[in-house]
Picture (tube, rainbow, N blue to C red):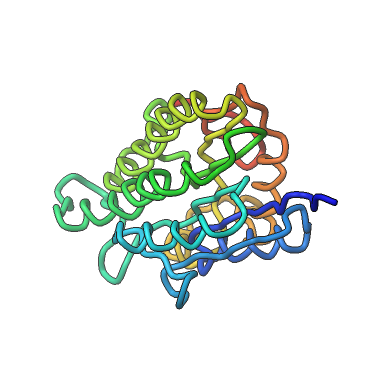
Length: 236
């Protein structure tokens, strides 16, 4: 008797607040037989460094030896590090920090797609999701500032759109999306929570639950788009 296929989900950035909550929620829901948690802080086969393509390729090789992932979520992100953080004015721009911001937030997910999308099934519904942000929307930018992060997330949104077009040629039921989790109480947002309106700062558990609800509700025509935590489309 043939055994049913094993289903798998992968979360990249699993040591972060949202990533860890996504892993826990996916395991609690038990929709997937295997939930694999990858992060820069992990050791062995679960270690991945988005600034090192060789690391991404090595992880992809171990994933290829197991069940094909039907869900991949890239939850990694970089907003600040030490004295470096979002720029308030163009006078604060620093080339090295801009390059690193874009490397982690945009180039890293692009390289993950390069190595993991070919491992996803060629038939049936699949979802490849990258955490984006509303600040990546050009039409929604009314405050300025945050140059590097805005640039990186705008690049992510274009990446999502472009990947979706190519991936539909491989699997016409594939879905590639960007997801905006809102402002979540994590180390990434901690220095900037003072300006958050009451009731709009989410716990990681709530954010993870909302994002998974959005993923569950996605249809194939949604591919290439960016959605917020309520399932509302964010325009470019």
